[in-house]
Length: 95
Image (tube, rainbow, N blue to C red):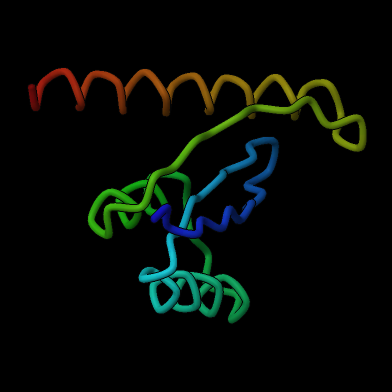
């Protein structure tokens, strides 16, 4: 029998973060949502580390936002690329 999956999306500036939760992870999902809704400031790295520790599949996607100035979009793209390359280096170092 296949487990029911639920995907939630978190927006972090220009980055969409997709987290996939299975039925038995509902408590973890509610805990994360409560942290975000309470106004706690979480960085991409903190969200990623939390998901790794909790064994929650995570995916990041950069999107250009027309409501942001070009300079802000470029800075956010730079930050996204730097984050992704740092995470890739960490993963290769662990293997």
